Image 1 (cartoon, one colour):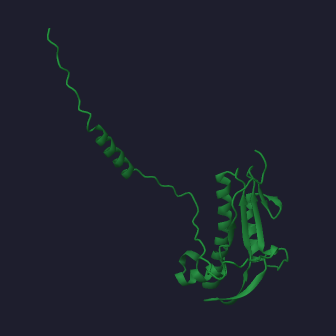
Image 2 (cartoon, rainbow, N blue to C red; image 1 turned 180 degrees about the vertical axis):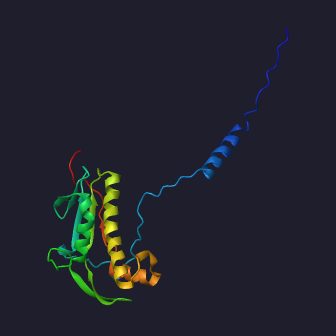
Image 3 (tube, rainbow, N blue to C red; image 1 turned 90 degrees about the vertical axis):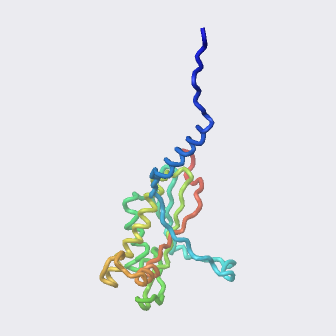
Length: 193
């Protein structure tokens, strides 16, 4: 009896084929992730001002804390996240000149002239155990409050919505209502889970 030779498949180029297939699928597959924050970092400080300490009046700081149990504490009081946007707007606008809300200063702004703007800053800090979902919800509410104030200012000053403004008008609105959100590094502020 004679043995029959079984044809063999050459596997020398299998690694090359696998690499080409992997590369192909990486190139054609969609990996969209539009979940996150859009922030513009402040410009670098001048050399002379780097050593100066910035003193902020306690009245002008709106303290927002999120603990590891995803509970929101605003100015020392527990708060439902649904109320955060309205409280943030009230803090910045301070329509009744409440001494417990942000102070105002007079400033010259192009297209506005001399106006009173808020000195307020939102100070946001979360616990290391805070869920990403809650963190994003709080960020969205704070940003939404500022965006609503910008929209209202655009309609009042230029009679159009913020999205319809020219770049010069947007810059003026940005100076009139700045995105003053300061974020501290997360820490363990809520105890054990």
